[in-house]
View 1: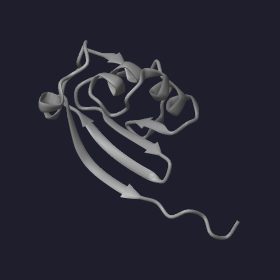
View 2: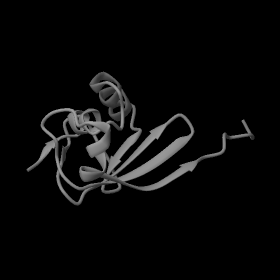
View 3: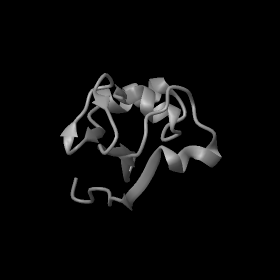
View 4: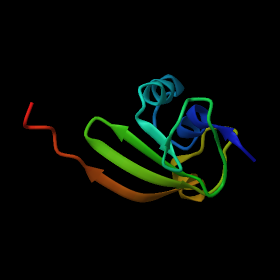
Length: 93
């Protein structure tokens, strides 16, 4: 079952608020399957989501969609962390 990106990010605990998920997507800091995503982009099982918050870039795999916010103990049933890296700031500016 597909679900809106901003809602998914909030429900599985990647971000604390849906407004933050919407802002990140509107600013171009979220990709779904290597394509820049809007808050309304549909995500479904098997999709890969990359989120950049500040200098931290994190990649996740969608394991299941969650209609409601998920308890911390159960989050690994809905999302898998694939990669997390810190990018260097641009020193040459």
